[in-house]
Image 1 (tube, helix red, strand yellow):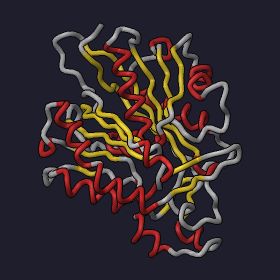
Image 2 (spheres, helix red, strand yellow; image 1 turned 135 degrees about the vertical axis):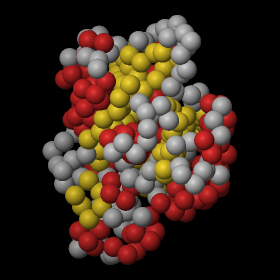
Image 3 (tube, helix red, strand yellow; image 1 turned 90 degrees about the vertical axis):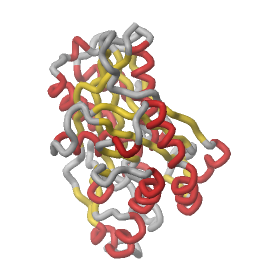
Amino acid sequence: MTAGSRILAMGHYQPSRVVTNDDLAATIETNDEWIKSRVGIAERRVADGESVADMAVFAAEKALASSGLTAADIDMVTVATCSSIDRCPNVATRVAARLGINAPAAFDLNTACSGFSYALGTADHAIRAGATRNALVIGAEKLSDLTDWTDRTTAVLFGDGAGAAIVTGVPDGEEAGIGPVLWGSAPEKGEALRIEGWQPYIVQDGQAVFRWATTALAPFALEACEKAGIKPSELAAFVPHQANTRIIDGIVKRLGLGPDVIVAKDIVHSGNTSAASVPLALSKLIERREVPSGAPVLLFGFGGGLTYAGQVVRCP
């Protein structure tokens, strides 16, 4: 049993192929101005020949290299994803095999865009319970496999990528670096965003998702802060799911953040990467040294299901 856990290090990976709004405008009826004004995206990354597991491995390698730990130290691997085409073996076991992690607890978790916060909360609980010492937590998505590139309402939104965290326990007497998770869902609204069937495409009622996100979610984000004993004005950064800049702005407006709080908007260059979006954006903030080590950061994911989850973490 430990007093809690903390993030030791982060890592991220995006494929090299950039698809701009002008690229999309050449094949479907849309344009750069319309996309930027509606969702705030300028470009996204699309994987060619790389799987969800490939991207998860690349992000995990970077996180592990930065953590000071080795594969031998990891005893849990969990991957948040809703886009893996292969059902078995799961992504987590494939990541573990390629990294040389011996006999870990290994499982995938699917709550779509809130997946990383769900997985991080699950790893934190396992460490607190004494079931795990060091966990590798990954959000990885290849949404290009599930995107109908002829549908102008969804083709402009999604991208591919992965983000990873190394999570470890903290000794008694040391402050936990991962606050209590606030998680939940609105299953009665689940039809608003779907990936169904054997050869699925993402289907979304964009207006329904937008209304839910901009009206219902801010109180949950505030509750995540309250659980951690942190006021929104004390946050150093807010890293929401990168769904839409207008949704992000709507939530921010209701949170009462301090004027110096950094709000992640990686969506401009990455698009919506579902479960990868929060760790991807957080890892970039850390890489650019925009948030000091130890500073409180609110993570908050939301999306398909409709699910949501968030927690305050201390920046590694």
